[in-house]
Amino acid sequence: MSPSSTVGLDLADPGWVRIDEAVVRVSGPVDDIVREMETVLTDQAVRSLCHALGILSTGFLFVDPYSPWLTAFFENPDPGRMTRPQKTYRTDYLWENAPAGERWSELVHSLFVYVRTLQANATETAKKRTEEYFRYLPKHGDHDYCIGEDNKLVRSNCALHYVCLGEMLFTIMAWRCLAVGLQLRGGAAPLADLDIGLGQVFPVYATCRWNGVDLLNSAHFRESGGRSDLLEAAWHELWGNRDCLRHDWHLLGLHSTASGNTTMERDALLTFIIGIGGLGPAASKAAVTDDVLNSAIQRNIANFIRHLGIIEQPGTVAEALTLIERYARLPILPFYMWHALDGAAKCYLVNAVWTSQKYNVVVDDAWGRCRHLGLALSAVAPLLRIDWTIPRSSSLGSEMRCSDADPLVLVNVIRLMARPLVEEHVYNSVFETVQRHVVHQTALRTINKGM
Image (spheres, rainbow, N blue to C red):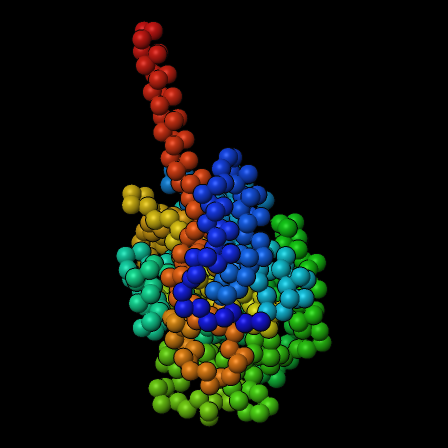
């Protein structure tokens, strides 16, 4: 079942009513709030609301303005590092393929957690925020790192970070081509020479990598709760005995169909490549074969990295892979696995659920500071109203699994879900800090009187 076309939100919708009643009722210790909100967000009425709007999953994180800690889902939280124990909640993962969802939701979640934990650890080393959700979220109405007028408008007006379907697919396939190139030719191979054919055989099980780690053979990944058993089973199910890049295209819906028709995914990818100047404005979509499109992805990797605003330009395959993983506008690994296992496109949405007027965090030098200290990180169905890589017409057929919901409706629903966490992680933090200050000042006055 596909997300329905949703112009607005009926305030009598059972899912909305369930959330609205809960957020004004829940109280007590944060652990109790989390448990109750988890029950609310997994309620069938809320799941139906999320499905209708195209919200496939959303979770929340907060930066404490008085400390460097980040509160979110992390592996083995360690107060000595940059993560706190889990004091947050999320919605269920919604899948197009329900049986696949029952089998693989835990894996997809563990991959998101794994990537987020590595990002938090990298931030601790850098002493500034390096995560894409801080780096690319608009700080002062900027929209330097996105393409498409609709995307720019909603980004600047509503402080949203939305990655369109074409960019999602280009990023994922660029990452896959670089991982294959690393195995076939070594990391020192010149990026300019990258040319992996769709039928070229490669060691599939050696390309399940992230951040330089072979995830299928990583003790650290297993020990950190990364569920390597599930990952290995999923990788085998996806690939089996297949061993060429063409199968990636089938997994992501990029291949030409037998009837010669295009898919939504393929059309979005092609539109994106044309949009960044990768095929020229006069390119005829109908004349672009799978081989030409595959070559265009690999030929435009350096161009794409420049579009991300990265001054450093890669000379080798290894350098390009590192930059793509570090600066991509989405967490690639979990989105790749989720799309491939579900057979349905996903896009990435970040929106602020709390913006401070006084406090901010330091982001990478080129991106300045960010005052959005409470965020919702969401997977959504492609959003037709702001996704410039998807045609507005229905010419691609009824298989277009998109959402026509107003992005502001999605944002308001998500913000309502987050409200109890804002209370806990923002106002309680301020209250506790003030309370400690009062106790300290009282103690000093008592000591001074004794003198």
